[in-house]
Length: 378
Image 1 (spheres, one colour):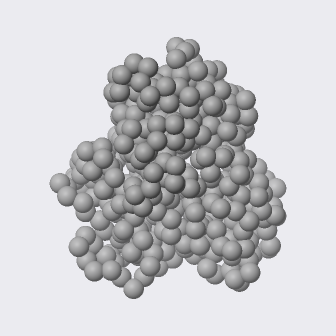
Image 2 (tube, one colour):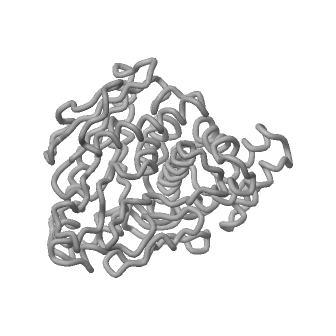
């Protein structure tokens, strides 16, 4: 039976660093969040069941509902704002509403996609999830957001509320798009592609909302999530993987930007949040080589590849081959666009014109070792 995980924006390696390097309150909060994530993984639902469920929640128009959980844990919570309602006094409610709408608009206007599942799925979001929850996630049905570190002393706060960044919202909702299309296995290279696709369209949602060209965009995922106490710009950089942050508590951004730096690890489902830097950089190079708005050509190539070509077990080499092929079909053999795709993948050490498949790295997913270090239970 095919299963899908809870897709969180904040990578576990970052929480592990906090649990090792932070103050005692920071450590305790990080461990609680790691434990919470591990428990939620035991509540996964079958993707086919969720696909059937989405059909009963379909509409022909944008339909957003924002729930307030008031720091509880039983989803979805109390309805606080629905489609067409005036803004709330709560900024988290308005951000969840506005940014899920921006994501819907991108997919509908640019890619002619009717919501996340392509069939009018209602966009439900829950804010104020748990107390001190440092993350946001798509659970297969809806979006869920924590409030960050608001309960810690100001000088110890690392994260703002997780509704604050539009690319975080776009990232998590795109996990839903991937779920209903290629359904990339959340493990090793397919899992890193899953994460990369969410970063790509999270960034594109922000660029589309701001009407930024590929050259003008910051390509930072999670800009605004960090408080002023953190030395960093965001949780990932697509244009310079490995440089997003370097902080005494959070550690240094571990993402590679080349296949030679691929990280073989048993943590984080085989390093899905770390190794996504490789296809992220390939897309950044492609988009900037093409120029203009990234959603018009590079984003279209990647989207059609996800929708029509990728399979659940596709790896980096397969994605490179298919994006190159799709670019040729859409824009012509040896066109600027196809050459840009090849240059993008070449920048990370992958020849997009090869028919072979790169070997899968070894390792298996498991709970982060911080549980053993700190004596926490699974």
